[in-house]
Image 1 (spheres, helix red, strand yellow):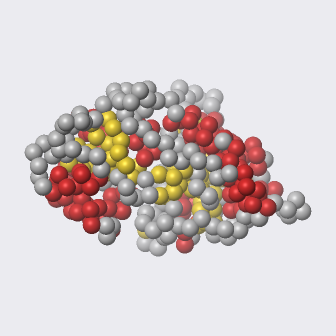
Image 2 (spheres, rainbow, N blue to C red):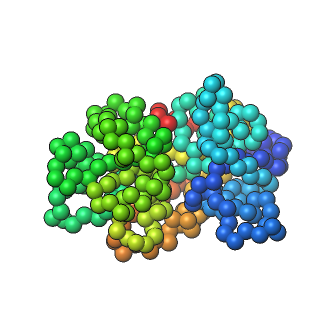
Length: 312
């Protein structure tokens, strides 16, 4: 950036940052004591990310913990999106899904992570019937009501459930209708969905890639993860519309990507995999550097905005 221009960081120096507690992005540290105060009470991928931004951009920050990401209720925004809109926070640092509706009130930075829908289920032997290698296979064997069929489940009220409900994709819409007819396939939390999949060999749980990858790192290693092929989204931070901080954050976010620092932070929270011998199918999709040339262009003058995706 032009050294003669005063940046948003230089004007503020101390930022209020809204976030949400969700593993492994941000969580309270284990064995907390009364002597541990402020931001030091937390750890996780988002905490590491913020610390890296604060060091490179030379600012201080105070975490403001909210209970949810944010949706529009009676014309008003809740959650961390609401914190940014209502100027309670200077920006939101959380695994926020970029949506068109949210982009009407905030600007999303460059992606911090990308993900898509996956389903997790107990590992199946090569000759085991029915053969399931894709989301289409899952839906077909449910439709045909085959013997020993595997049912699909999802977290009730989640972004993924809402995506399925509004989808015009034939296979996704068909899956949603079958889930609706069997309410017991809906789970009230992600943890409940994973527990059901571990106990029931005839249950496949739909969730997002990062959550599945984090959970499947731990023993027992009886689950596998298969890409569903839909609900591809990106996660980003959010600032108020037209806030100068948008450009400053994007330059540093891209620098963390290009330098490999983001990959190191990711590996700290997702990398230690006790099931890496092959018991669980774990795939990393995001580890591709944008390249030094792209970073150089952005560092000179970042003017483009990443395009929002439809859905929520």
